[in-house]
Image 1 (cartoon, rainbow, N blue to C red):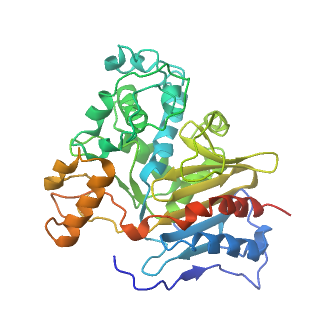
Image 2 (cartoon, rainbow, N blue to C red; image 1 turned 90 degrees about the vertical axis):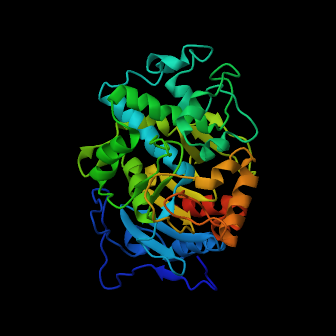
Length: 399
């Protein structure tokens, strides 16, 4: 995607002649109501400040701000609109984790504290004491190399790679953000339900909340990438956030058990400072960006700057995604001749693959197909401004 300049398409629909309040009973359908920030008890200046902060970073594709279920602010970069897809990267972890809570409610899985070996025989080794909770809390104790198992992304079978990851330390003793944990969860779901995770996500979450335009990525062997990679619009990502803001209930139907969301929305681990000194926490495949007496802001998070923030107490959802050009060759990841790069190291593989594509030595198509973020979609300033972004979200509910 070549963008010579940004001509921002900025939408805050101001209903100047109609002042109404749509309460917490409102849920969007195929259309999504918009309202002025003031009609929802927020000053327009606060919404504008948050949008301006996100667009200081040229990588931003779109941002959506929801209060009381209605859109109070929305903006897209040039060549993008409300239907344009972003790719989730690791935001997908939170989606597939929710299926665990649903399976517990249905009796397919007994408890978060079940040992993984109860469902997966291949964990009947040094890993036998690892629980489902340990996987969700990123404290499994599985081997954790410097590349954080991002090399898994370049394999024919991501699941076979995850299954091969060995025991390294006692579970429940240390937070380590390990992609293998999330891939293993998909296998647990398959054994417990006899359905693959993409089918479960469609049936149990996406369709019930009205999400119909999406792509759920799989590897070349047909394994669902439960640690990564859902393509959909910022509005649809926001629907998932709203589902959590509404305690798992959607227009009267309990989609996700409230007790699972209550357990998710707490602080379990303080996380390392990677790209920000701002203190963050983690619980059951969700991040925690603010947790104090004023507000508690949880979020999904994906590589290069994909976020959906949820302030449940104040019924606020904010989604921000970065620029993405969606491949048009289906939802199965294929590397073709690029697969030889898979052991080159993650950063080297990405750079080399991009260069090959630029030179025309490799072209995207039926044999090379994968979610990818181009350089113009990689966040920089947004990460630097992260503390200000979180404060701006909290400020939406301040009097």
